[in-house]
Length: 421
Ligand code: GLA
Image (cartoon, rainbow, N blue to C red):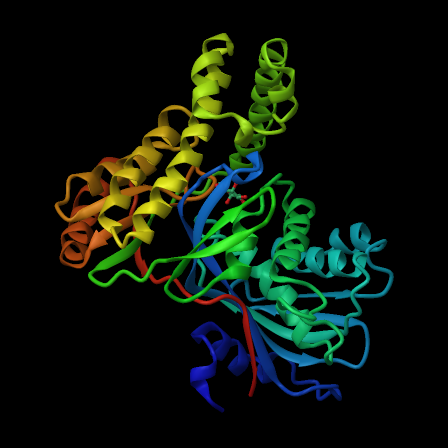
């Protein structure tokens, strides 16, 4: 076996496969693995569901499936992380989704969700047996669920005998169509009204690149993000909040309300301009400055953050395209301040980590990552500041938060992959 063809979690799942599935059934295909990455988001947080812009990068942490295609419609799974089995059938999907979902553990619901949404789109699928593994930290803001969803789609394509392909030309689904299927699966599996950011970032990953995505048109382009001398440190607060999804859905609703009010305020002055206002993405900073004082305070804060954050995405893109990654740092600090003070999705532990990062020379910028209310921070750090930041976090974070942080260094990496043994 060419072990270099597989990311580490895929290798470990491959090793486990014959141990778990040892009932000697006759398979319809060879042993192989498929995987998809988690992501960081450099800037553009909570802009996705406002039809705005995001700048994520897939990272070298993946969800992976290792297994073999079956001749029937059964899917049998074993989670390495939860050490737990799950099983469902492709028969009758998507109609049988609700009934089958009820019997599954949480992690398997994401997988069933993707499979069910693929069948809704008329994609022909085969059953398979697989061990599911991965090294995207769960629930930390690095999109473990999106990586699992996209890896599921990749696995279905891998185990389809060529009837379902993913790619840009002549394929059954483009990468962004896969992202949209996986986003729907996330909605049904978790109840989070999430945007397209996480799934798109996983589908579109490229080594050394970030991707600028327009979350309305789904157009995207790659932005250089190979950064010699600079590292991407991800620091996990170790805080997981059950209520995060209600806070998230509430923000989304507030953005919709702010859009409607701004639309109605602009209408008497300029009905044509108002007709263009479908989401906060359509409000320019100048328009916002003109009307903002007439918004209730909460909505003014929420909308103000989103409109400024879209601008920050373009500032970061301009800096990276000039090769000036140092200039991205201050954009991250400002992004965090907006998430903390205006969008109010940070938490004490995230603020402490950002504060510690701020006190270390050579940290260019840091901010909370993803939906918020817990999870990690992303830190752009000169290599010589990696150790000082690590020491500062180890020394001050437990003292100030009563918790231990988990520190990791990631790289912008490729998208989904697959290989036979
Ligand atoms: C979560 C959601 C994404 C996005 C981010 C915030 O990760 O899944 O769609 O909204 O939060 O940017």
